[in-house]
Length: 306
Image 1 (spheres, helix red, strand yellow):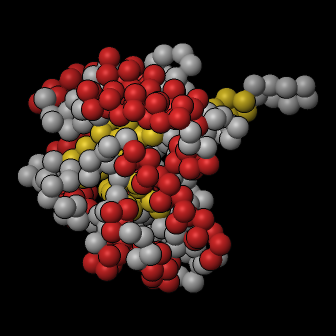
Image 2 (cartoon, rainbow, N blue to C red):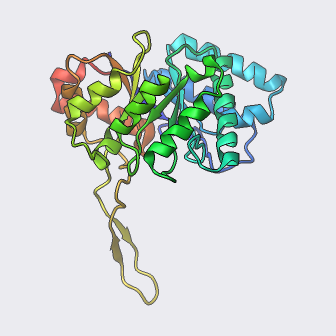
C-alpha cells in the first residue's frame, strides 16, 4: 500500500494548524501540536506526516525536561500508529549557497533536524528533504558546493538526507550527478517535474529514475500536488471595481486533481513501492477528499493507497 501523507497543516480539527510564521512559539508548544496532530491523524488512518520545518532549530535552542517528556510521548504515538515522519526545511536552508555563512547555517539546521528524528527513534524512512538552493555560478557549481557540504556531515546524518528538484533551475537529471557523487536519494516531485523538465522525460521514466536512487531497504518519498488554475476575486473597494486575480505560475492548489494523481499511479506500475506526501493547501482535507475521488474515478487503483 502507498501511504498518503500530510505536509504539516491540519485543518480537519480546530487548533491543530502549526503556524510556522510565529517564531516565538516555544518548542514545547510545537511538540504539543505535533502530538495532537498525530492523535488526529491516527483517527483518520493517515500514517505519514511532515513535521513542522522549525522543530529542529527550536529544540536545539531550547531542549529541557518538558521537551524530553513530550518527545517520548510523540515517539510512542508514532510507533503505535506506524507513522512515517519526515522534515522538509524551508528554502533558506541552502547547503549549495555561495555564501559560506548561509551554507554553514544550513548545515547546522540539517544536523538539528536529524537529531529530532533520532530523538523520535525514527527508522531510515524518516528523511530530511532538501532543495539545492539557487543557481549562483551555474547549476554544476551549486551541485558541487552542495556535495562538498554533504561531505561534512557525519555518515548517520547524511543517511537521512534526500534532495528534490526545484521548479526553475535544477532538474531531476541534474540531480543524478549528485546521487552518483554522494549517493543521496532523489525525491520525485510531480509538480516541479511538470514545471521544469528540460530533458523532456516521460513521467514513468522520470519517476523510475528517482525511485532507483533509494536504498532497497528504504521506501522512497514522492511529492504530489496540483497546480492552481482557479482565479481569486478581489472585491470592489472605494474608487475601484472588483477584479480577477489569476493564479501564479506554479502555485499549489487547495486540493488534488484525482485524474493527475491516477496518472502517476498508472505510470508507477512495475516500479518499487513508494509513499506520497501531498502538498496541497487544504492539508488533511485534501488527502481525505483524494481518497474519495480515487474510489469514485479510479476504483481499480483505490486498493493501492491508504
